Image (cartoon, rainbow over the protein chains, first blue to last red):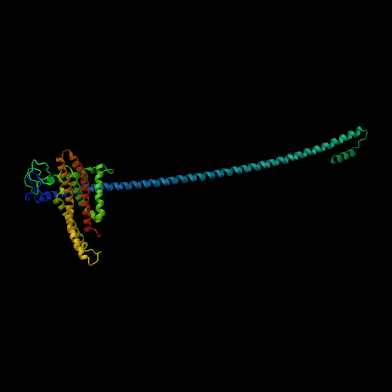
Length: 174
Length: 251
């Protein structure tokens, strides 16, 4: 019974795995299959997939490098911007200081001129005031003498000019 | 066992699915006869081409779904070979990828109802395991010469123990193809036979057959896991054996 392990209508008798009459067939087709798979894999599939993976890896690496470069550029651009800003600020401050100093100088000059002018005017005024005061004093003594003359005459005396003058002068001083 | 029992209630033939049949006619099976083995191995080749060649034909930088799967399989095995067998082992990457794709696709295709599981046959798994065994042995002697034998002489063990360990190592080395092949074939065969047994129950139990059908669903899920894990185990063991031949590291 066990001599023919394969029954007529595909029925198994015992274990078909141990039916050695089918082994050459299985082994032959297995070797054919393995050779086909090996050649398809080693000639087509594996190099292709390997190339795709390597491509992707290099693409990703390149993209990362490019991104890093762009980031560096952005950082340096920001730095340049900040530098320019700081420069502009110091420049502006310098200009402001310069302008201030110039204005101060003009102001000082103008003040000095004005002071000098004021001083000159004051001196002039003082001089004219002195003149006026002197004139006034002279006029006062003259008027006083005339009034004294007239008083003396009116009181029936004879006005001696020298005496009157002396008296008026002494009174004016007092 | 399988006598002609027409008419009796319960007829379960769990092993019928493993019978090798000629595709055309009913003649004897010569070594060149196209059989269901030929058919399902051919389907495995087509599936491999669809999975790894057709899906990657656009070579896209941003992959499509199919290309992602192909890249994932490639990366998975490539990393396994590199991690386990070492950098030198990468020369054998196409070879190991061939084994993996064949075992994986045959296991998965075998789970299609009415299909034929080529990897459930000891003839197939034994050839695969012997190929690995011969490759490792030949490459080992080619690359290391007599030094390849030093893997049997455990230099880290005490001197007195070394001859005994050498005998053990030698035996385990020659048992490798046996365990390598029977692990794969046995797992696949057992799972498929169990499903078929439950299917036989389902046919005979009437309404109560929901129970075996539920069991089939559960076992089918388990078998999907087994199909993937066995392909993985077969491949990673190949890498481990290959490391003996190409690497310097002792295990």
